[in-house]
Amino acid sequence: MKKKIIIIVMAALLLLGSISSVFAHPPIKIHLNGKEIFSDVSPKIIEGRVLVPIRIVMERLGALVKWDEKQKSVDIDFRAIRAQDARISLLESALAPKDPLTAAKTWAEGVKTRNGALQYAVMSSQLRKETYSDFVESNWSTGTSSPWIESFDVREVCKVNSETYRYEVLFTYTDSTRSTFTDTQYVTVIKDEGNWLVASLERIDVKGEITKVTFERNKKIKSIFVEDDKAEREGYDKANVLIGSDTIIYDGYTDRILSERVLKKGVEVEVIFTDDPVAMIYPVTAEAKIIRVIDEPQENSLVYRNNRYGFSFSLPESWEGYTIVTDQWEGLSLEGAKKGRVVERGPLLSIRHPQWTSKNPRQDIPIMIFTLEQWKSLQQEKFSVGAAPVGPKEIDRNSKYVFALPARYNYAFLTGYEEVERILESNPLVPFEDFSR
Image (cartoon, rainbow, N blue to C red):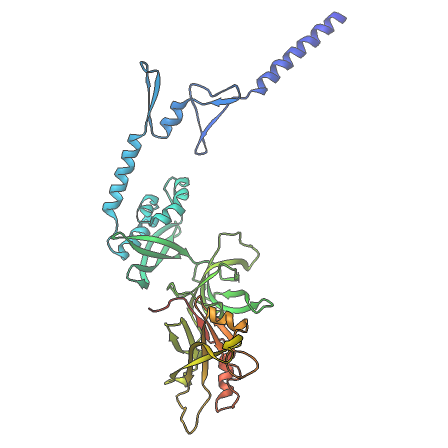
């Protein structure tokens, strides 16, 4: 009896040993671009290295693989792939659009027909880098079979300059029920070596009117609440839009950058979110990548624009016929032997009411303009401007200039000084970066 038990135990141990040896070395699989491929020769682990049969991998990559018996060498030839790449490149070059509208329409046709290769063919090199992996992952077939794009309409919204155009592309979708909805994308087209190519694509996440503005403690804007009262529009109907350090605010469909001061209640905007996750608690909360200011309230429909220094200033309609009085501010040194001497100068622009006369003067709106370096020196008390114990007050700035209000500008209490105070309280000055030369 004891002998039988020993034999049974030994048999069990041998069986377990053989099973463990099988599971200790599972077969090695080969995955290419996420898909398993099979070879008649299995991969092996030899001395800690994984050896993979080269023919199956190289052929799947499009190469020709040959064995040279005399030389005892493997010949891998990628010339066929390079020739195919050259053929595609020449074909794309021959079909490259020669005008901006054709570029936008060709891209839209590629979206409509779900042809990723056609979309890719009319893209700039930078946009190709950004989208290549997505096209490959979808095997160059984009969109969905249902719903599908029934038609599209392309409309120019802005000629940024002679080599940059921006278009609105309105896609109309339908399905088997024949119901329809629309989706809008904005396409920027640039001129590149004689051809016109799509440089960027923008899809609007929320479009509507700003109904609430929330501020940080330092009075910088933290967020805006955007509501869309037009149900037929695509995207979210309302959203809490966070203003981040990288958020860019544009004047309409131009490339003119605006200050966040333009974000006020009643302003119509279009918002594109960043790629960060969106808080899907209704209404959604997301950080803005781009905000385009489409329309502003009409209380101040009169705008003075200064392209030389890069700012605009909104005025009530009652200021129609205003004039600009050009003067100069002077800075007196507060240091050493130069103390009391004029060491800095800069422009002083005054917006003058149309009813101003020498007999009955009215309160001007004065705007002092400093370079960034001048303003830094003023804050360091290297020089002073005016006799008042306090210095000018910054209104806003762009990348080159600081715009400021002179100290005690309204000390005389001229006619209209209260109106000027109300105008200044509405943050009417908006700096931008599109300087004229």
